[in-house]
Image 1 (cartoon, one colour):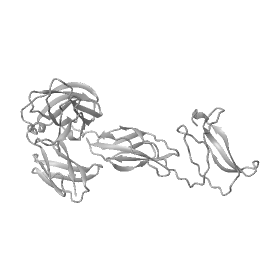
Image 2 (cartoon, helix red, strand yellow; image 1 turned 30 degrees about the vertical axis):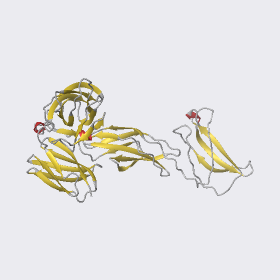
Image 3 (cartoon, helix red, strand yellow; image 1 turned 45 degrees about the vertical axis):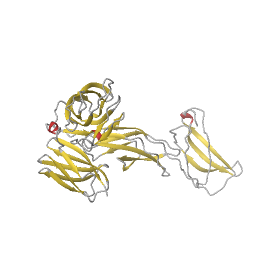
Image 4 (cartoon, helix red, strand yellow; image 1 turned 180 degrees about the vertical axis):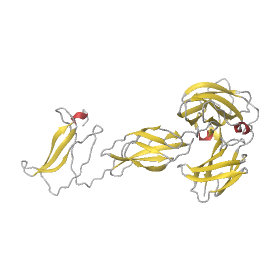
Length: 398
């Protein structure tokens, strides 16, 4: 019913009779509970006799002296359940580490009952659980994963997948390590877009179009401990004087930086800004908020050290005039090449589902990777040289 839950039936006996005085017990239930108002449940039992009369003898409810029941119907079992459960809501993450985290969500409802939840990482099913949490393991440090969940009932009906929750694992520990976050992989708003017009950018593109108020790029970053981090912004400005950009951390404006011009779009510049970050997931947003100029600038990436107070490796400043890492051809049909100015670099490639597909060492500045056996799609290439980590995307086609 739609009244107080304590009035719901708890224990009952279903009986049948052909004369209204002699009754045969067909089915009993005890300790039943209801998770929603006007919820319907299906109970199956075997009966080979057709009766003229049926009665439901309710012997207990939640509490009190009033019992509520909206409707009762009988069938032969030939009517299939086609109603899907509600969509799991309010996805959150907890216990985030370098290689794992716990995914949590609110329970779904169903006309009969939810029997399982299926968890997806980057669109690939990880498995099912009967609880409203799931431990996601075997991950890479400082990597963002897209998580969704769907509910399933006993008849095999699946709900739609939930809204996407992006979770970034913790960065690798160590005083000098840093993690680069590419602008083309960030959240874009206000009319900005990716571009590859001007050379020497990091990653696969940069973000341009900061011409109107509200134009922004927001990075999802993860750090192990709370503190003040020396975040390095890599940007381009050849449009004239310096232009201001607001900086927001976790939704709050914390400062304004001046993006100076060097009159050359292909010579990227670096600017360091100290930002206080929480332990775990954070957002860092650069946004145009000022009407007093019509200038534009480009944003390529940010680099975040792994510990508060640490400075990013000097390799970042060297990257102003030349890309540290090149991947080509991209997209690739089979073999692709990785060039780096480091004498030796460790190469790791994973699929968007988080599966490790390749590891190697680039000695002498270059290495060739045979991807002929890989499935078509986007792969994440991580290049570690000393304390510097660069993350790029490679597209494999057939």
